[in-house]
Image 1 (cartoon, rainbow over the protein chains, first blue to last red):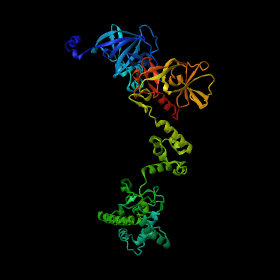
Image 2 (spheres, one colour):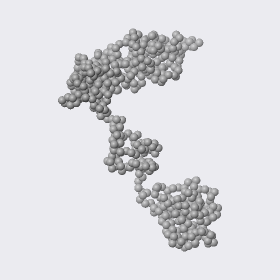
Image 3 (cartoon, helix red, strand yellow):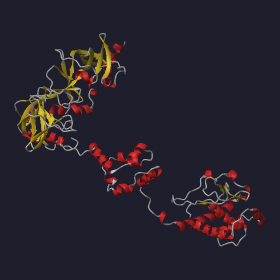
Image 4 (cartoon, one colour):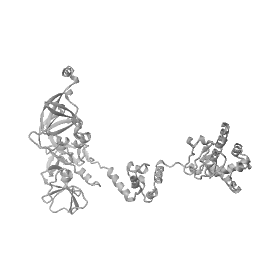
Length: 161
Length: 407
């Protein structure tokens, strides 16, 4: 019944596309509209004096892009660089930044009604990035709100280039 | 004392003595027309000389006292413990009491030094149940008595308005500070102390929050002590702290124009070097000499961990910095002090950087560098060289940073 209603009124329950990636065994999703491209792992030049969650910078077709250690940002244990390691170039708060992930999975389609509010558990540092959760194909998908991934002050710290 | 004065007045009334020209006395006599037989019941034994002296004092007090509490003239109660003199009062039955509790006469407050204001009796001061019934006044009598008392009071106030009440009120801050010190048991700091030492509080560039506890009435004992024991050395220490809190930060981008440093307005050469596994670059124009580390540097006591020591040079002592520890303290040290080491001496100063390895210089165009923006937290970071993907150091800004007093 709900599905029929949403079909009749798609504007009330829009369908969103999410790019999913794996990180420490969990599946995360980011809005596809904020993903610019996905890169294979390349050498990341460290930046002196950068915050602890910044791995370094890369050259993306002549532009210097800061790469963030997503595991560090999500308070996860450090991981190893593998062949599946990717750098997802995203745009958040009008800034372009790369996030290092274990692997990129797919693009999923989710209705707004399918997204549940994330339980208010865990430490505040990682919980504030979570936009919601969704059960898809018998697995939990954690949706990330990229605009909250980095605060304005942190953008000032890492966006020096 | 005050009660004694009024006892003297009443004794005059009772004695039916020769009335003066004061209309108040006339009226009081008419109001309290106590017969002579009643007078004999009063146990008042005041010598004539003392009586005369009290009469003189009465006039003096009425003339000088600004806090004559006779605004209404109505009968009110004065607790015996509230009056310092606990003098003789006339009670409701007209008898003299050495520590009386009820007065039908205006109370003269002796202490007129503390305040320039006239105290107004509160309603709570009037206890109707203690008003003697035999001396209740008719409303018209009250009004007349009130008018006379007001007239007398105004005359007294006019005459006693001396210079002390015409002085301007002290500034609020002084007043508060004086109150604070007076409230303390051990005033250990005086304004004269700072004055004698030649230090004025207004000259100390402290944030207001540092001085606020001293003038707050609700400051803690710790705050109080900290401000009480201020000495010259303490003031110097406070000044140092203030410089640390709000130093006059130099403009690290003073030499910048067109979004890049002055030394990068055109094509320039930069020397790439490595420390702690990270490649950095510095423009050749900012380099003075490159020294090889042949002998052990002389370490100085009480220096930061990134300060390796000094290297004696003919022109002076070259202060050598561990570049890896200074730029990247978060990375593991890789500088082998026992092995080969290069020291990059900055031009025009006696500062140098110890680095691991050197590479050939590269020629760079301004557009090859992603120049840092204004909000970068590292003032010595000029930008990133896109091709080599390494950070370019702004030597003039770094030198400015190194020459800060805190460094």
